Length: 407
Image (cartoon, rainbow, N blue to C red; front, side, top):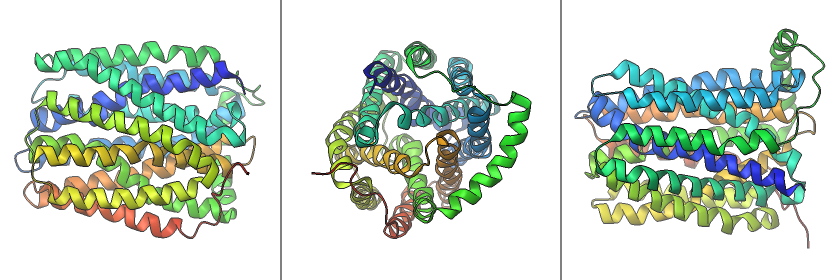
């Protein structure tokens, strides 16, 4: 195991977490729904739901093809670089979005999310290459833990600007942190394998290969079942993350500065959870860890329906945060153990496809239920909870996901 590569890989999680924390989860999401659109009767929920779902649809349609092109043409790192700085640029431009600029804010949000999520296809595919099987659970968890540290730093940097109501500087600082701390990964991660096809030919082969990859995935029973379960429960996780700040702002009256404090608390507990569950993921197996986390997430959603005060929501955030890093890290490890060697780009492309195409439905459900009920976000949260339950039922049928170390 090359420690320099592992450090650079984990540091990218630190970098892109500034986007996840400031844009997707707290400041921009709440600002767009509450101020740019307006959310008195759920209109902001509906627009934000469409923004997220449109982004995920684009990622879902392109990620398998991009993964195949990366493998065939040997340009994984270049595509990784392009998608990363597409998101960095869009984040900086969000500083120009003012109340009423619904379409401009929508387009920049989509571009930023597509770049952020698209880069994750290539980022995830490095895990089996830089870490041996017995270390993948811990390295995956450490990456998420470092990422939560990045979220905390990004939010602390943004907090003074939010208190001064200078939200444009929140977005500019997020862009700067993302762009700066992503650099080591492009320097230290393994070089691309030599491509045996040109880009144009790789695109054609990628289309054909995408169809074949679907057939191959369907031929692996446990992989097929795992991705079906992941399709559902990851939808629930992402939807909760995308709408938690909007829920807190509208239903419980949180201000932007309070949202930052809330999300810092979530990141601290998520960081701790990712570290604590890294060893059990290897020792007990990722399946056991994911099952435990899905049970916890189901309880969190039910509790959110009944929560009445900001203090209660802070307490609920601790439980949600502690399971956030664990379920994401264990799921990535689960997937890594099921992939045939040499096809990481294609198969992780479909891993993203499942997670992000599923994320098309959840935000639409939340936005539609909220809007249809006149802005009742509690009903929307409860509707999203069904994704965890059905995902858990499907996961129980997967026979893989056992311990990666023995003794």
